[in-house]
Length: 597
Image 1 (spheres, helix red, strand yellow):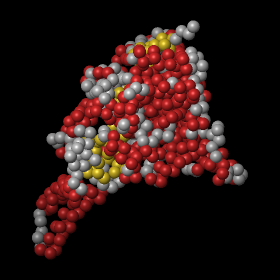
Image 2 (cartoon, one colour; image 1 turned 120 degrees about the vertical axis):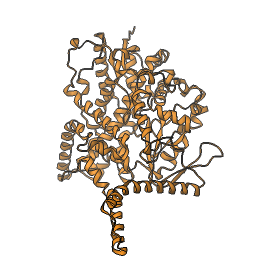
Image 3 (cartoon, one colour; image 1 turned 90 degrees about the vertical axis):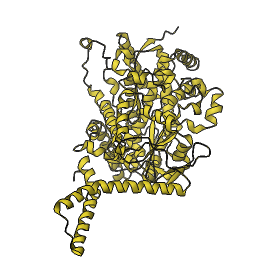
Image 4 (cartoon, one colour; image 1 turned 60 degrees about the horizontal axis):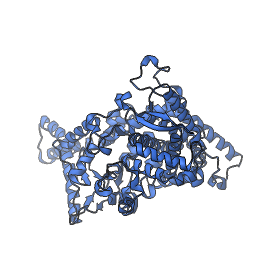
């Protein structure tokens, strides 16, 4: 039986809330008529039924607030300060956020509120508490020390379900533990230090860049690395890549249309990556409307329609794999021992198929790992090249280290990458200022308290089933945590005395890969892939220049460009985020080929 569209399904779930208030009015009218012979006029009964909804809603909201305040007082705590607003449901506040989102720097509102209200506040929307924190101790509690008191939560699970299903990043409890356990073997040191896949796709990507630059045309580096990471990730996961790098690179808007040898519409090899990005964007929009998002996708799931292109690639691979497994089981070739073993040439897809017979959870897990392995790395490589274009001294120092350790043409190895200390510091600084996941969240399972950030002030009470957001982007730019130069790009902060002063003293101020039981399994895999690509890039090119003017749509609006929260006082790319960060409309650059003597 086909499932209902999002809108009708949502309304069906709200029926008890809709029907109960007028039912109570009707019951009271019936009681008064039968017991006291009081018969209210029809118009009065109809008016009472209509008014029962806002009255019931107001009573429920007020009762909820009263209970929370009472519980907080009993613990000697307070509710986090609520962002000031004028309209019911904070609709005026929500409107300002939507306007600022189109014209201001990313998380501008969050940064402003952090300055006004402190590191903990209640961004309450549609009468729903949403507690925001940028305090390391609170984030540490959510992710590590009190991990069992928090979960992803049903609201987030529902919003992400179309794209991520019940995969590792969108599940809780036993389902999360199951996915975590079966994927862990694929991120062992032996597997993540095999660089054949990186090398093959990096060469393909850099060759396309060289060909384009020789034509005198700027290149969208973000587009190239999104293809590089997509092809690398799909080959690692499936044993077969989507070949998105086979598609022609896009041209900047200032390049004459008539001079373009290829049309602008999506190439057949490019369809998968375009669909994937559209699905991510559609998923992120749901978060703006909280629990009422189905009303804005009333008759059709806007994420699902983009997944059909991805299914065309994934479904035949999964079906063939499960068919082969069934044949092996029938022949008695699959044993408990063979299921636990992981062959050197085994893909994650093959490993999952050993434990799961249903294609749906296999696909869910694959898409979860694909987003984690592809999008986060793509974002970091994008902003790494932006930093190199803006800091010529850093680029020169990084190239010097690379040439000293690896050489002008040798393939980098795991030992090379371990030896390049400045490379690691550079990547860390990129991850600090432009984390791949700028804002994340957890949901409280029961009531909890957070220690006050100011001495002598009461703790904060957080009610059960409350969504708690945390922003590592804001935390990692806080001057009180990182020093007065926190908004300056400086890789040396991970090498000099500032490491001991700030990071060693408080390690939870740097969380680009999360922490605790849900820490990113692919952390070292990401460092290896990013380092490998940067080495190959710097072997091929000796200088990088930012050319956002070649594609004006990629330039941030004035309100975003000179934000007081911008890195180095001025941002020349417009950082945005769906589930992960990206540069809106690309990162357009020119590069100069290296000359080796």
